[in-house]
Image (cartoon, rainbow, N blue to C red; front, side):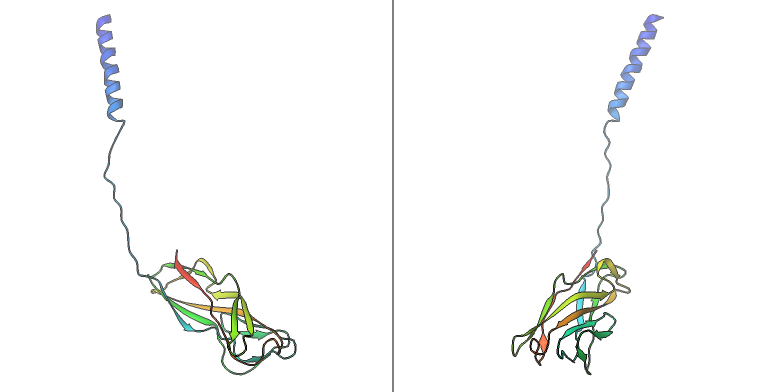
Length: 173
């Protein structure tokens, strides 16, 4: 009886060892996928235009909001003519989210006749700048950008046309 008990115990131990080593490793075939989407493109439909004004005696600021509201501070006198925020049209993958990155520093507008400059800063956009703040509805998104223009007195900023460039970055998330 003892002998059969030892044999049964021996067989059980061998079976346990064999079973545990058989399950120590397993392989499976897994799957991967990728989807290529349309390239994101941006077109400047209208330039940032602060319009016509006179700095008068002390200058000040012109604030142009993304929705096209223009106000002045200081002695700046707004005049007729057109003004508008910059408008960009983005195209790309339908329903994709987009990051809007505005300039991190000021841009300078230069008078090509005399080299005098105006500073553009405090950039604002609609939709707001940030990660994933824009959505390409039907593959399209319109982004408006406004800013503040610092204006000196008439000596610092004499009559003329001032122009310059700035960089806005749009990217998929």
